[in-house]
Image (cartoon, rainbow over all chains, first blue to last red; front, side, top):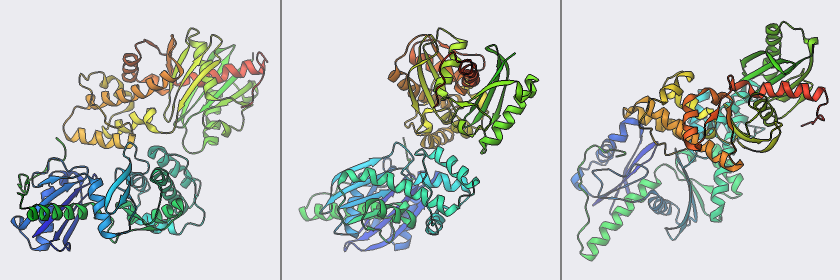
Length: 280
Length: 266
């Protein structure tokens, strides 16, 4: 039996397929973009192809994330908080605090024995999300994925005084025109996002292990800045984008096996492998 | 004849005026750019040219605005809150509340009959409360700033923005455009969102009639209409709203130098 989790994020769409033994058979990560807002089915198809599976062989599909509604091929929708908690727990069994910084929000989760017990979230403002760095990388004509390495060269961080992304973009351009080295500015941006998220997450009481996921966790500069802000070590999974989809796939497996064990029917969705509408 | 100068270095544009006997003699506006020192000097030279005066003719110069510390030739700096209040008072003596909407911040000021500040509140932390929010969306829609106000008034069905954040608002506008929603409906929605934010600032200082609008926001008829609806009052709009603060600075320059009131160092 195979189980699929699809995490439709604002920026990235992620699919994971696991087998009965909780082993990952395949995983695919694609930009959500305008295309995959509709064609999320393509991302699942790609994952099935990788694992050499047909849709009929998938026992259960769970959709999670920002765009999880209106997914015609999913059997069930579960919130990203629950899926994240499950996914992170499977990767780091001692996790107490999970911090996820995505393209359009930031979350802190308190996890006890793999279950979500408390959370904090920020999605009202682009500051403190991946979007903050994306907008500024764009304005500087740099690739976001280079930011981490660039910031490691910094010797004197510049403090960014603007909270607002729009104003920070302008501030960065003024600093550059004053001749401040790029690496010091980028390091300052990482500090700004890390301290903002740390301030929010501290409400959950920080205890190890702290795990950091989401696209921004790929940025080594933010990882270091977050460690400094929190004053403790921060663990990052090998692929920080996948924890939500892994959690969804594992929950799909658990729900199916539980139902089978009890001899109950499995609650199914429409299971049509066709276009999803991100919003209705 | 004594002449006075007010220089207002804002985040987006720099404004200057010269007054003679409390009357406006010349005014000028330049984009602020990245070097406030250079722009302030250029602003002064162009103003003097327009007025046909030389630097020695100016008795006293007050600098204001976020770049006021970078005006090397000024005699004194005064906050833009105080200058705005004084400026609006000279134009509309009856005004007791002024909503000053600038490119990067907004402020609501309550003033007395002498043009002195009684209370004020500033929104400067984020683009959501400033003209910048509208700039960002106008850019998405590829419209000129001067066109957006009138265009927004054509809407009967304003889009509701789920976010106040200018960055997320930009994405929302892009999504609405791709859904085929009319530009005027998107614009009306942005004006509505900004008007609501400004109205919440007005609530904090208390609305007292008469109420005026100043700053670049005073050029936007779409914003004025939404704000009037939201506040339930008619706004007084000065002829050159973006010069109100610079005018106030020049008037205060005269008053300070003539020791009509004791000089206050900010």
